[in-house]
Length: 182
Image 1: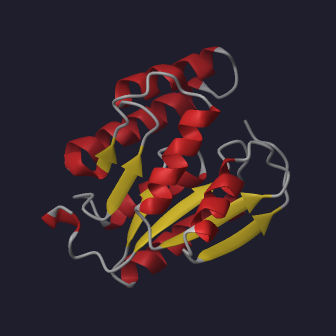
Image 2: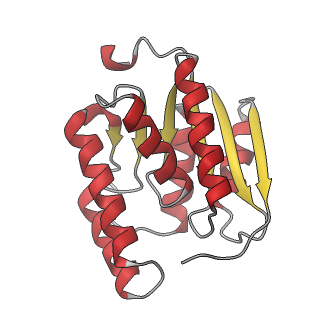
Image 3: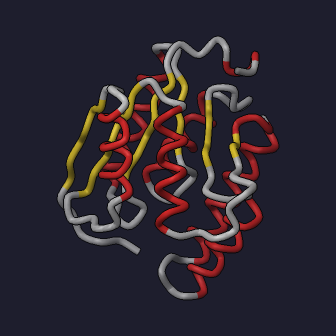
């Protein structure tokens, strides 16, 4: 492991749905990230909207050098950016969401090239790519914290939880019931 990351006491994966959010979830994610940083830990995310975005944003405020941030992407950043822009054109997310996320990932990469792990082999963003990314996130983590919206149907958060439990990685879970926000 790089010297950049050698002083991190514990890597905590942050997971949650990108489809749903609320001010409460955002507040809880940011509070948890501050707790991780106070204890000398770092975060691991998948570079997605909402929970991942909030966690990364808070971590960047606490660590502008991004030495305690690891982001695993299911593809290269360029392919991932094209995917998010296409999803915005399809109306699945807003253009602002896509551009804010892409900008955040570019800022992390600029601050610390080693903070972004790009899958250079994968050229297709689909469920299999996301689940492979989840496996990489879990393998790089000492703990998993889930911010789970109960009506979320994508399965990514549950996939991360199952992978963590199979590897004996502790899981903390916060459940929420709310409406969809685009």
